[in-house]
Image 1 (cartoon, rainbow, N blue to C red):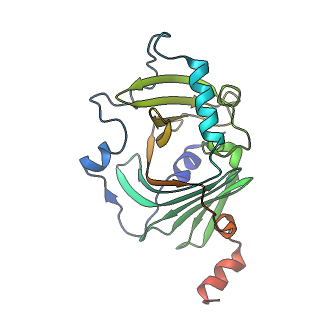
Image 2 (spheres, rainbow, N blue to C red; image 1 turned 30 degrees about the vertical axis):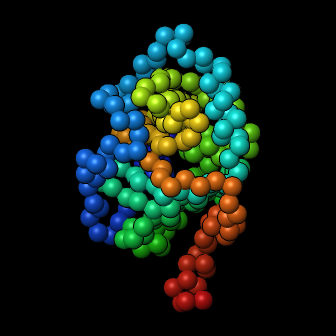
Length: 233
């Protein structure tokens, strides 16, 4: 089951210096600019006439399955309000890398089956199964949201579509809400809510798709790799 440690580690910054606090401008971008907070609205679903569930899920499946590679700048707001930024690289199926900007020593790498959280300062690498993390829903070989997940909520507001998912198997605790910009349904951000109700928000900017990514980005470092890196090899 997805513990608090895992849910925070996937999208958490552990910097050797105190992390910056997100200001109001950071907190309000780039998701829907509405008075209502989408995090508190995830369980509110408009009347059935406003959302054709099957049609929307089919459109989202088509969009997500159409992503082969993706690269974007990301901004992450942790439950304590601290802000981290960096570069996200994604290659379906199964591969992902969060490269945090300095001074954070953290890298998060998925190699197809495993997600590793590397702390370069402490020289540690913690591993968890990819299936036990929320990014599994983005990285599957063939995404079918209605079969892969429990649909916990759908909402449409101010040009954005909100989809909240839970794991029907119970392997992942908590839930994740994806935010898509309409009408193209481009993924803009997501909110991970862990078992204790703590929320981590990840927003994407400067999104590019269809580029070639270096396969080495998705190689989980072994102890000898880290020693060689320190020696400048």
